[in-house]
Length: 410
Image (cartoon, rainbow, N blue to C red; front, side, top):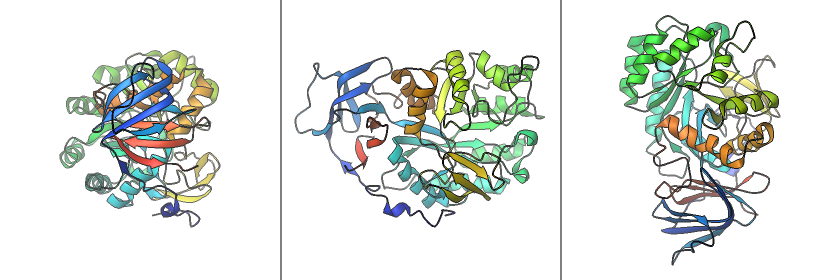
């Protein structure tokens, strides 16, 4: 599994909790909808779908409902993490279907109700393996954050801006490879990160867009005009804003400047206080607003495991506090951020409202995955995917499809 000897996911209390009720009623919490916060709200759930959201004065629990009293807690849409390499000791690239399912279970502790297993740049057969194992992971019956597809981070990246991506996995766009990936995935690839300045990238962006895949710009040294050309070709997303991309220099604007300036592109952002300075997060929020940013973790296998040495694909990474690096101690290699802490940090860093931050943690990722019609917000008719957070933003309860999938005792 590539996990530190000090960590045993099986010993996490309540990780396997699953309680199914025909009807649920969440009462007395601060309920966050896409446009409003209800200080004393109520959410009514039946057969896995939301039946009512609003003020407690406007409705009461249906008969035979299981009651969840959320007094003093926040009731948010379940978080959707579209950039995750691993969690709880398991790595997407190496630990197979069982590891992917375990990672999805571990994320329930952080209010994540859906996610995209994310590959790194690798040999073609290794990416095919990750796709095949993600498909196999869909058949699991245990409670876990739902698999919405895949995010392929690479392999068509700029070697100069590789970050923690392995050299041997990086190459120019290859359409024969892409066709094999598309055929095996059968519609499951939701996002693909690529560098737009590479030969063939603009044509690949068009191909991805034609197949309903979000083309995301990242690991790139492109200039502003090339980024614009990529947007014209169909790119609508950028991978981890500011990180592993050309910057916002006042005489040489690059991809980061384009992301900040152009409304046609939404950007992921890692708000762990390591990848992006809080003041730069504030700048991004002011420029982009909630429709232009999506919170992600970029988490590795070390998520939730504490300090130690872990795996990222074939790399070893070391974790000290919030910092996850390659063994050189310098090169940042993903994160140990969790989605509940991304929300907490976004509130602290950006001065945005809780309504808008929740939107960036759930609705914007849902849009990128093509599931905003049924996920991403607390609205009538949508899936009952819900994160209930305590005042310190730790997770009290995670509900997936109306099922209580995780509860924290005490």
